[in-house]
Image (cartoon, rainbow, N blue to C red; front, side, top):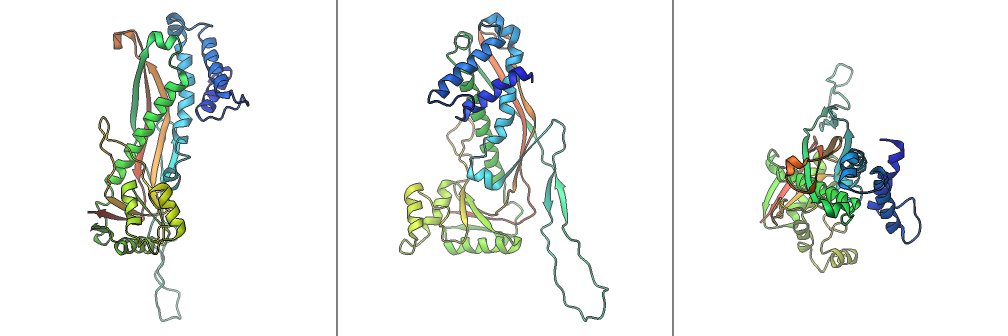
Length: 337
């Protein structure tokens, strides 16, 4: 991007995250919006008309692409779920993504008679690279030309809606990953029935022992609430009572020997049905076992009048992303009747 224009995308990023670096008083947001609008007007030759938009829009798209490309992966930095269980990477188009996965087997000590060094050997630190598939995702949005030209819809508002749309799509992809988990697990690691605390603790012990690392229990808010439901109220700690009273669930003082974490909710597109399973708890190794790879930058393009047949600004945003479960460790699945 032209260095003279880079400050515009920087200002937009700061405005969208309420971190306006160029202004420091209480009217920062107002001043930032005015500065962003003025910068766009400068690019358009000082006035926002149909002709100036038609002749200069590609520079505007470059700024929007520069704003969205880094902010999509950064959207997860404040989410406890994504921070704890997801590894996010970026690469250029065509780059082979590779996530290193360690072999879960471990060194075994064996008895021998002594007096020799001629024994079976075992390789240390075995690992392999796993690549995940990526696919294109898009959002196609529009606004009435007059409203856009008059500034009734601000650039920051529009791009925040686009960012939110891609965030919802990511939550849906995560739900799809969890819905497909457990198909090839050993029978001992799959349980179902009425919630029972001992059953969950047994699964926690299995996963912890099999992987030799700490575990975390994940599920929807409804599923995680079963953990508190299964605890004797007479024995629950004051910290757990406070957590339950504040959040309706217990994620830290669980009484099961590990933390719990809520999987973000999302709807099946165009419905009000939750995309994830509401009746399932997953006992997971406490690691970033969900891999997210953004391949390339965001692309923006306006559809022509011939394509939309009306007097609207019709803009399509595209990006390429992949989401998969990548781990060599065992986990468990508990379906609650």
